[in-house]
Image (cartoon, rainbow over all chains, first blue to last red; front, side):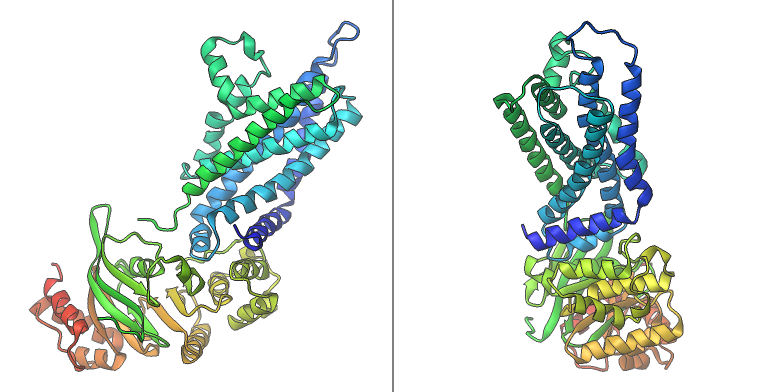
Length: 251
Length: 267
């Protein structure tokens, strides 16, 4: 690892994003708009006094899922462009370490994800009065960890896509099953055994569990930290796998 | 065999890709501090040979030694600059940002980036986005991204394609100055006319090294002052008699390679 090369990469990726106003706007605004849609979906529900609104549960999970999906897409396309344009091969002839490149990417998109989730979380709290027991800071933290997970999986998947068209299809393979099985639609203990077993090992499951902990407890719980730790370990493992797909020497 | 003055030494190099022989029986050495031209028709294996020297190409057999180390050695990444045929830069970044980013990999200063940009004559447009440049300008940005590291060995794949004659002359002048200050350059081209800028030439055809000689020797062997014509004549000689190409220089290992290459040219 070389901090200079890693930070130069982060700076370069952010510089590229900075020139792309439309993408930045989409990243920052769209999650908040979708959250608005979710709020109005459940606008007319009647809840018994004291029971949490559906928006408090679903909206909260959305805060973690948006950055995951967006960062997966953005990263896999950006990295694929880097592979096909020849800049990746060129970089690999320089002294840069593969980890500097990947962590540089990870850092740049995590910063974007933090901004994105600050906007979305702010809207959820102040505009729609999201009510949970835990701190909004922890929600943002889980959102950022999810975004980094999206980055790591995007980096890995870009190795298996030849075209941007394929890269987008990977979303259906990698992202959608995690959303279906994370406990958002059906509580995990009510799934059949096979689906529950799959759900138990999918990374997004841990972040949804973590969010439930935040929603139900005023203070950060051990389970929350455990879930976060597992997520971090998965992210690291995926990044290492992704670095194995970067080859300096090719046929 | 080991020539301490040689920047690059290649012996018995063979590269097979997808079951096809891309390069075979390649052996030569490149002297340090000079411009060596790698010439041959399109599809003759120039890019593959350059990639093997840079160390990004998997080789089937043979040896490639660069600056005293096996090609691809991590230490060499600080010493080699490689400019691919199509400009590999970030189109959505400015010229300056591109050159500074690649410079950061070598820990160079902003001043060095400015110098590299000036060296390719783009100092007036440094803030422009690469995407807004012409093809010729873009390939110069790509070159600046390699120059910024001040490499000891600079490998350039068709650097003058698409450039107007004035710029082409400028670049060759710059390459000459770099060689004079000790940089070793390997420059590929399919335009034989450019051969006269080189101190020595490697002629590649259908994956084999046809000859390793100086431009004057090529003129002599091909019986023409026009290097294009001389090259064609050399090819015809190799094709028709299959015999050894006579070299005006002293016979050495390179002459041996020439002989075998001359005999085995297919068709």
